[in-house]
Amino acid sequence: MKKFDINTQKISKSVLALAGLLFIVIIILAFTSGDAEEIETVAAPQAMPVEVSSPLVEKITEWDEYTGRFEASNRVEVRARVSGFLESVNFVDGQMVNKGDVLFTIDDRPFKIALDQANGDLSQAQASLKTAQDNFERVESLRESGAVSIEEFDRRKQALEYAKASIQLSQARVDNAKLNLEFTRVTAPMAGLVSRDKVNEGNLIDGGSSNSTLLTTIVATSPIDFYFTGSESDYLRYVRLARNGERRSARSEGIPVFIKLQDEEDFMHEAIMDFVDNEIDISTGTIESRAVLENKDHLLEPGMFGKARIAGSAEHEAIMIPDEIIGTNQSIRFVYVLGEGNLVTTKNVTLGPLHSNGLRIIRDGISQEDKLITNNIQKIRQGIAVTPIETELQKSESGELAIAKIE
Image (cartoon, rainbow, N blue to C red; front, side, top):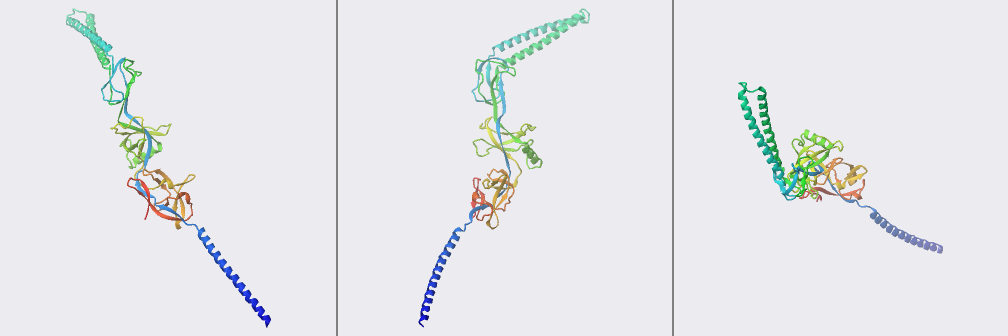
């Protein structure tokens, strides 16, 4: 009986020890389970928020841009038509002159003497003509009676004809002397802006030939011409547009051209294309065109550079997106698009030119229903989950485009 009590005590102590150990294990498991849940919670990544927007779809006209140079619509080199000493310069360098204004004066005294001499020769010829006329009239009345020989009659008749020819020759010399005297006053052949005088007073100048002394130049800058060149492919595209009735013909009807200068942001100057060359340059594969524009304020000067913009297509509906969201994979261009389950996908696109609103025209690859990812482009990749934030492309009052959140 006593032995049974001892075993009972041992069992009780074992049960208590086992219960305590179980309690400790439960507590440890509880704490360990809580830490695992917390670690799992911390390790689970959150989906990156990104802005998504549909592409902008509008009816537009595509524009082509060319660089060119302004040239004077008319330009002349002023040269004297007679040689002599330059007596005076009658203009201020760089002033506007009118047609007929006297620019230079050449010493005219030698030419006055030449005119007087020619007039004297003409008077002598007229006197000789009078004598020859009288002599002929005398023998003419005697010819019928036979009182004068045929030889004498013919001689006096020839003398009369010679006197008449001398009159014509002397008169021509007088006219030439008058012209030379008139040419001592070098006048402006057209209205325009004159350059500086390239020869000063007192110098001897040559005139009347292709190597005559260059005195100055005059340019007409109102209107002014703008010359630029385009490629053969551009030329063919424009011709086909005109034949299809989608654009006016540059040769026969003229098309509007908009020009901006180097210090201007917008194409502020409107011109009309009035000339397309008759052949393509075989060395460059380009063809030259010209636009003419008013220059009443004389802002534009010959030799200035400018950039021209002309319509390169008929009006059509186009898909446009910001240039900065387009990615590059070697020669492939792509955009990130929101796919099913808010997963990132990519679509390859075919690019067109930049439009005047600053957006890139997309020829192929996306539709207006696609949701394009417009930010965090460097942080995402295909297949990851994202949290989309709806935005849209819209124009501001100034005409610029911006991305606005949709509330």
